[in-house]
Amino acid sequence: MGETESRLRFDTLLIHGGTSPGPFGATKAPIVQASAFAYDSAEELEDVFKGRAIGQVYTRIGNPTLESLEKRLTVVEDGIATIVTASGMAAITTAVMAIVRNGDEILSSSSLFGGTYSLFRDTLSNYGITARFVDPTDLGALEASVTAATRLIFVETIGNPKMDVPDIAAFAQIARRHGIPLMVDATVSTPYLVRVKELGADLIIHSTSKFINGTANSIGGAIVDCGSFNWQSEKFPHFATFYKKYRNFAFTARTRKLVHKDFGACAAPLNSFLLGEGLETLALRMERHCSNAMRLAQYLAAHEKVSWVNYPGLPDSPFFEVATRQFKGRYGGVLTFGLADKASAFRLINGLRLAKNLANIGDTKTLVIHPASTICADYDAEVKALMGVSEELVRVSVGIEDIDDILEDFAAALEAIP
Amino acid sequence: MNLTVNGKPTSITEEGTLSISQLLETLKVAQREYVTVELNGEILERDDFDTAAVQDGATVEFLYFMGGGAA
Image 1 (cartoon, helix red, strand yellow):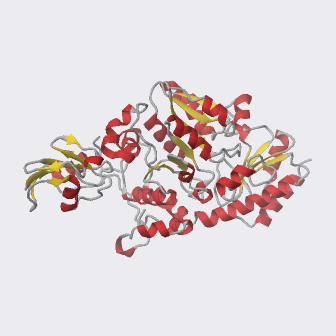
Image 2 (cartoon, chains in turn cyan, purple):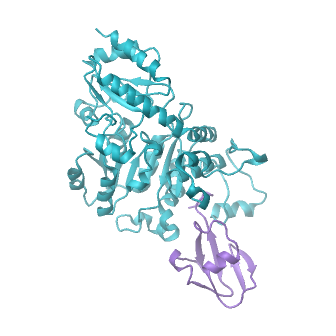
Image 3 (tube, chains in turn yellow, brown):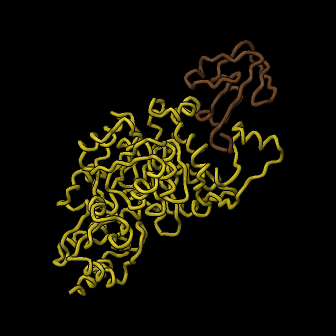
């Protein structure tokens, strides 16, 4: 981070951090909608391919519009480097596969986004990689589950859809003690609630499609390298050359030069531009997401047809204390609540007029979904329980509409439930 | 002092020996925080940039990981 940027406050960094003037004095990064980049001479292109010169070659490997978003996210998260990817799942897949190899283990929170759970349990298991899932609130069990083969600890800042809030700093201490990197998916909290590097994260994952984009117009992901993990370790011999050459950039260098280049899950220039547009207003939107979610959580908690509400901002939440400490009194825009049964949950969703029934979070619009029959439908009861998903549960991504319109929408839909 | 830098003959006015850090400064090498240096075919540890001596006739490569497709 530059000297000027290091003095700027977070909301200002979202707008100005890591930006550079565009052509003709443009205040936006240009959308370089090009697949490849031409050079005048064979020698110049050879130099770029050899790494003797910095330059663009092909958009799968790099692109000025992607690079602009990468620089901004690096500043916003106070990291050392960022790789933007095609989606949040592309970011997780790329980052994890850059670290683990055949025979290695991932120690993961059991409270995970369904896509991540599926990647760890059902896809990576085909390649000799084992994931151990542990309740993230049981730190003793977490540490006891570290084995000689553990090469990564993975956790979400706010479990989606379980809405639990693991103590990230405690995760980081365990990771440090065992010389294992800590990868934190901060999609639901966003850097507005906390910059997880401050809590000890080594690598940060974002599905930028969610709150960072903010208006649900683009899919994207990001891997932010905090530069904090020491890759010179007998656990990571495949990083030895990269460590020697690039020191604390070893992870980003290995990922860029091998896994990201080879898997090819690159971001699109237009999406990267739109994601950067969203980043500018993240703080303003999150402020409203948080206040609206709190109001809706309080309303639902007091409603006779609602069995329970899970929102870390409610004082009776088991995660209130850690969330308050970790997120400085802000609790995010997502909540879950329970009705009498699945039929009631369906009636509520069908009765809502404003809130959209769809599989996404982080939009300006209020969104609802019944996870047990949709995003978590592939899992049996035991796994659903681990994920905190039950038949009567409805997830809400609370939008930034006028809160009275949101409350009236839920009031009418609840009224219609017999 | 005559060197071969990234495959090209390069003359610099300094005589005697230079450290890699001094050479990075003299040649105004871009993005010094990222650059990897090979001296006479050997990758240098970053900790050695202040002490590794570059002498007349040396071959030096400055390499980046950000662009390009080569590993």
